[in-house]
Image 1 (cartoon, rainbow, N blue to C red):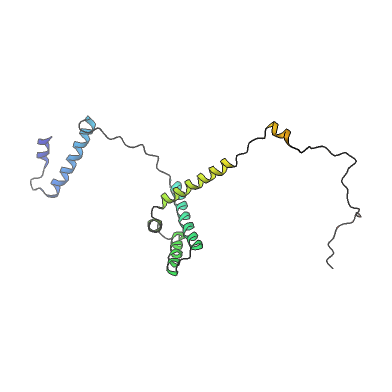
Image 2 (cartoon, one colour; image 1 turned 90 degrees about the vertical axis):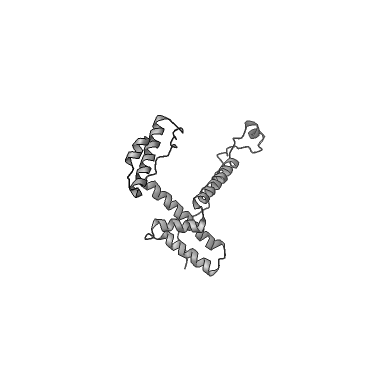
Length: 179
């Protein structure tokens, strides 16, 4: 390959020479990888299928909703100074705007919340943990036969002669008497 590389180089050097060197490097890398020489070929990491446009739009909507919710929650629970309040209201307006480009929204979310995706994930895990704890503590267990026998309540049917008594009222239609 060395003799082949020397014949390809341009005598004047310059840009063509640099471009041809890069191309030769690529060819060498491919050849060594296919021959198994040198380093072991890198196996591509198993990638998930790229999310569809609909899934991406749904994810963005969740992210935007979370950021807006955090800003509104901050306005309600904290006592911001007028400058902070104005900044939060402006950020909410930008995030809700249909005309604001997506990169601008993402940039704003990152500047306000840092790694907002990690925060969302942590909040989601915390809520899930709380739900599991609540479900575990609210687990209903059937009452055993022995416990039922110990119960002091005895249910008996009423005799037929003890009927529900109804007040003696004439069979007139009921009306409110406001006047």
